Amino acid sequence: MDKEEFKNIFNEYAKEINVELNDNKIDKFYKYMNLLLEWNEKINLTAITDYKEIILKHFIDSLTIEKYIKKNSYLVDIGTGAGFPGIPLKIFREDINMVLLDSLNKRINFLNEVCNFLNLENVYAVHSRVEEFAKNKKYREKFDVVTSRAVANLSTLSEYMLPLTKIGGLCICMKGKDVNEELDNAKNAICVLGGTLKGKDEFFINNGDISRCIVLLEKEKSTPAKFPRKAGMPSKEPLN
Picture 1 (cartoon, helix red, strand yellow):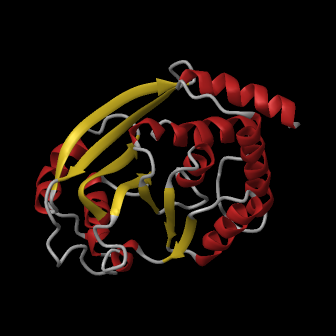
Picture 2 (tube, one colour):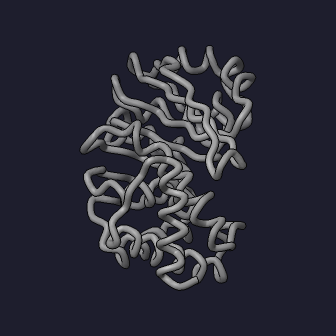
Picture 3 (cartoon, helix red, strand yellow):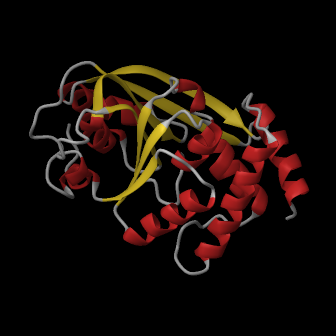
């Protein structure tokens, strides 16, 4: 796909979510896509390799949460993988200060390459499990915004995200449709960890073909020191 075709397709999809990008930002997304596909031949970064699908399901999908993020926020994207939603947000919103967190070092190497190649500033890729990262005083309860996309169920996510969120901060959980059962199962965990449900935003993209639900958790009080539990426990035994 040449750059002009990429630009036209990107802008067409972006209109659906009321986002406008200048040519410089479009160029960075184009370079990001090509790097993603190049590295994907060496390491497993994404199962999505069709150009239009990358634009829609990775880039546009990531940008759907931009509207919830206040100016100059300090954000951590946990389990970022190939950089979603973090890097698309950073390309679009240069004001965000960002940490990209992943447990696989080969992904961190890719993310560093992307950030260097695109000249993205104030974004740092960190190799760590979230359970260990959240125990670090440098990061615990320091973030205005914590994001995650397709990482875990809401009970487990709450234990990952809320310890990193400062009081008054926001967790943005990117989910598919039908999250009501997950929400019911996670109510107690969210409360125990110091959070509360702020809202749920359900919508469609690509003219209704793709269903999305954004769950917003607000941090009301400090998370007890024992959370998150040791590595693996939040996923094996989610809080009830």
